[in-house]
Image (cartoon, rainbow, N blue to C red; front, side, top):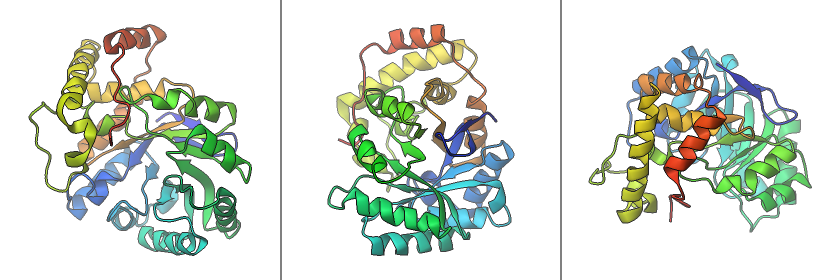
Length: 305
């Protein structure tokens, strides 16, 4: 598994990160043993970077079971999903440590901006947790370039986690250039656009009860149909190269020099192995130009609304 340094001060991490949202039931409930087998399959492939969050349902607790006896092999990231009060932050860290079965978190991230809390106080709280040894690196998720700049006034950021995929490319405008210029590692999430770039779904597909995609705008009506049409063309191109659309979607994000690692979710051991295999495909500039021509101007600017 290829690795890259996380920002200018962070460690080397695999270019594929196992996203644990599906493992906690975010895309349908899973048996604990299936989750454990999926995590172990990822580790066996060299995917030793795992990303979860306080708000990922049962994800942290089931990861704690899966990582029993294997904690020292993993770079473990989680997020503060609730409010940014110091009281909640301290409580959330303790809850995450307990659920994950560890005494430190490698990367602790703000799950999203909370303008009602001044970033100076939030960063001070994170730096205090770092001094206490409870967290080792600090990151943010879903921040604008301006919000990154404000946070950096109050302390070092090791990473940023924007949404980024072939269909959702807003991060290219400001966030990716800002992070690259300021030495902030980039861990992109949703490279498969929540499944739009898997090639598995048709316009009449019905998602299981409890699946977040049932109420996401990107999976409704004309937007859904348009995305699937582009995905079909991209799938044909990928297969002409001897690969899958799934692998293309991941390899494409890694072709951007600003990207450190790509978060790829998995619900089965086979999916975890497929994620890892995508890291072996390095797209050329000619290939990237061909893909841009196929996609044209089509973008899903926001999956959620």
